[in-house]
Image (cartoon, rainbow, N blue to C red; front, side, top):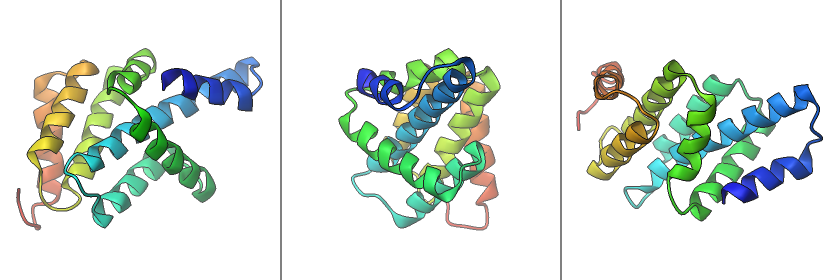
Length: 158
C-alpha cells in the first residue's frame, strides 16, 4: 500500500525541489486522513457526524479547498481500506511531523472519535495504538482526550 501511494505521487508529479516538498505534504495529508478514516470504521459503522468532523478537521488542518479535500477523502478511504497495518501511515507521520504536529494529530483523532458523542472502546484502543506508534507521551494522549471531551461538555458523555 505504501508503495502504491508513493507510486501515485511519483507518476502525477515531476520532482523539482518545490514540487518534492509539495509531494511530501500530500503524502502526510493522505496518511493523516487515512488514519482518521480508519478510526471512523473501527466501530463497524460510519456516523454522519464523524464524516463531518473528519471533513472539518482536514479542512482546518491542511487548509484545503473543496476539490482537494474531496480528492483527499476519496484517497484516504481507499488507502484505509487497502492498508494492512497502521504502520504504513504512522511511519510517514514519524518521518515528517514534529512532536507538536503528532500531538495535534492525536487531538484530531479524538475529535473524530467523539463526533458522534460517544467513545467506542475500539476507537480509544486505535487512538492509543496510533499514539504509541507515533511516540506521543501518554500524558499528551490523555490531555488531548480530556481537551476534546471538555469542549463537548454540553453534550452527552461516553
